[in-house]
Image (cartoon, rainbow, N blue to C red; front, side, top):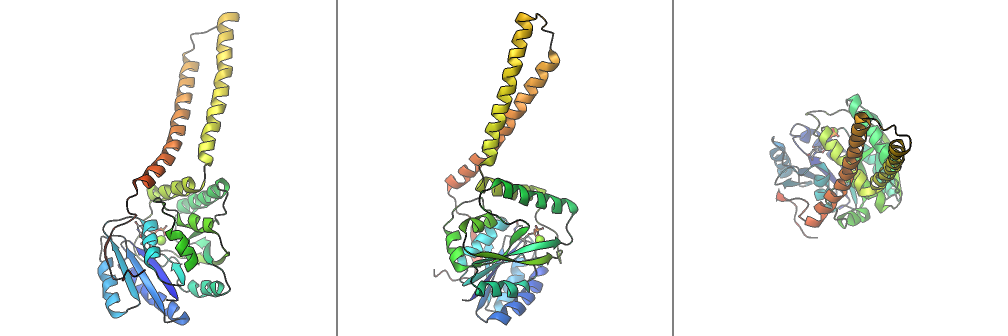
Length: 310
Ligand code: UDP
Ligand code: MG
């Protein structure tokens, strides 16, 4: 198999026929030996039925359907586990990532690059809030990690089968695939594109899920928050020490200790805040360990039309 394309889909019934058409158009220009794997993340609409209808007519179409909604990163991981292509493309179902760009990516792949990611020059049809928070997040993450995770890059990319094999051996449960792929290394390059707006439907990445992905990205690739927590602890301990000296002096030497409700309440609240923040940071890491230690399967497949031969 030359190319596999992984398309995670959650409530995308209207987009499926469109992306099918454009992907088929594009991929058949490269080879006839390709597969398109739709991963139905337990959609509430007719996404699965639509995929099945297409799969009956076209043997290039494969599908995996989850028993419940596991989320975008895990849907992509399931596709990665079952794909067979030498080159593997990850693409969103909502046509925000233009399938035609695969031609350009494939050229780079043929030049010998193992990872070709797509860098967003602009983003259409997204709120200024999403654009700003995304931009900030990419830069914060880049500043916090020692590995090089490219900025303004989503999951839309082409990766070599070698990289896929390494990804399958990374059993983390809270996935941040772009980080993992950067961590794996090899010769990487990028192509640039303008990200369109969604054709049908609405985003399935509300603020809560964006924050979750951001936390997963940071905790998976950086210990800086933990170090910051201890730094904040040390700084507040030094400040407290100075305050203690001052309090003792004013009581015993200068005899000027006042009733002092204001200073008392401020310091109690301050220390309380610092403690809660640092406990929260540690909690994020513990949750991550807990998630991995439980060692549950990453996803559960309800139905699929891929023969498991590997
Ligand atoms: N998606 C998924 N499971 C989810 C949420 C999203 O498989 O729980 C898929 C969705 O169908 C799309 C891709 O992940 O193909 C990106 O989602 P979306 O377009 O909602 O995110 P955005 O582009 O707004 O960041
Ligand atoms: Mg989208």
